[in-house]
Image (cartoon, helix red, strand yellow):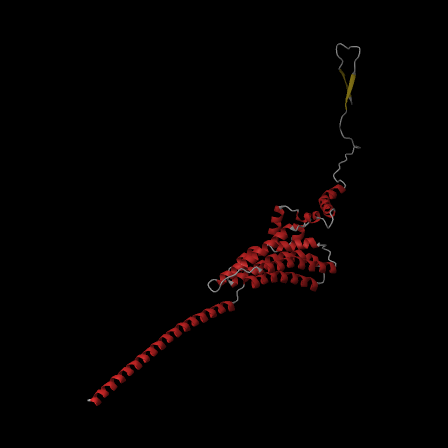
Length: 332
């Protein structure tokens, strides 16, 4: 049963005006017909997916808002944080099965800042270390001279590799209709970061130990090459097996060939060069010896000639003495 409570809230000065507030206590005992509704499953809101894709959409909108011929269009490709560049550098040298380097590290913001400076640094370290290796091998044999052509050759080889190989792979993936949808910018970004491992290796290549140089070639090619293979394998795995394996072999062979070309052109000193130095040294020593011997021979010849002249003088003197004695005896 409900009970009624009456409260008098009027003041003593206003007795004529009284307001009565009635409060009722209603029991909250559930009956048999009462039902409690609890909402546990809420419908999916489109705002959730919009929040997840908003950043990517804004980024793509910003990239497409500038004209191709403006400086701002290319400036966006260098808009990257230093911390992000460092993470991409470390991930490019350590292969991680089950993780795609392009999807995990490069998307949705591929950059050209890191790859550009990596390639530029590799050009100078390779050229300088190559000249150092040439200097170490030439000490004491001939006058050493710095070869500036190595800088030009290194720049041509490295930047061509950075752009041409991804362009070929992009063309093949487009021709085969790959479902990975890798963009050309993402691919050159991956290839640019894959060269970072050769920067410290190029400095160590200056050590003229053949087995060490080729061990570094294998280590560098296997580590960064494995990252490339794990990155591009999902793009070709659904294609014909021969084509897929052929592309994987092409990626690894070209990556290893770049390192081998560095060693053979910039750092490798063949044994024939040292043999030639030894031959030149032997020839020079023989020439000096022969020159010394010829000088001694000339001195001995001069001594003989002087002796012959002295003997001729003595003979002449003796002849004159004999003639004088004979003449005296005749006169007597």
